[in-house]
Length: 404
Image (tube, rainbow, N blue to C red):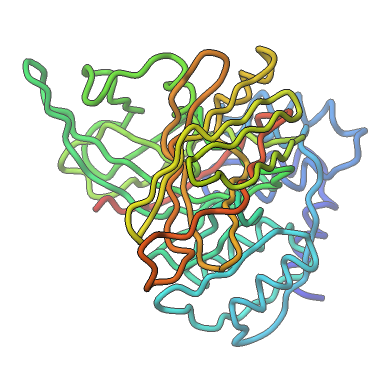
């Protein structure tokens, strides 16, 4: 019998009390495996598990109680030596339905060895990312997680429906006249979780414990604690920016700290459970186009081009009800510009709140003949907005994160 299968079988065969003892925090991998095993036990044990959770450290107690409410995850079997990363990702998609889009980048990862037998899909995905030195990021216009090499990465240990990878850190100092300088470390993570209709953002981080190799324990840090360091934001824009395309944490640290020895935190991921897709024909030469659909009025206000390099259009979306208007206060699920030639790429700029809706400045690149004097205009604008969503809480632990 495979060692991983045997270990899983032995875990499930244990009584709740034995599994609870393994959630001691000494080994995060063992602690989270025990939590997953507790969640998979028969419902008759639920009362005993919840009672035992009360005696655990706060972080593990909350992680276990959240895990008891989360749905079971698919399991996968991956075995082979010198397997190309693309083949591993294809198998994860085939066996567990994970929407993965592989991009090799400048330097493709080396082949990896795997021996997974009936392992939770997101745990297997985390290990594949770690061995292949890649990380996932949700791309709405592809409706998938793009997996690519973005530099050294390391896996974290998380509740079973999540893969989370540490990507990079940035050290800085905030200096404001009349206030003491603040040293901080911004940590970037990449995550994947069941995506529903699309990932709307990550936010609401709570740090349970952070320990560094030198200096006091870090605490969460927000730039607004020391006064405005950028343009003022109203409440609407602040709420919009509270959700990012990936998880990140900013901590106060001392200049002597070289690594975070232990980091335990929770983060919420906002997932669309229903969506609506709206299409509008590409704007005419004067830049006008308008459509009403599913309670939204969408209008192209103006359009301009800058040679054959790029163009931009101003798009206004108004909602028929306050409920729909509130759904505009978050990232779109997907946005896409189409034309008859390949190569067009685009991005949204930060929105501006207007009466009854929002207004975006949308830039697109390429998509035309390099010899042409003007960039090719889109023939169709497609975007998908949330119709309903839910916030899920992920618990994760990392060890030995370098600060550089």
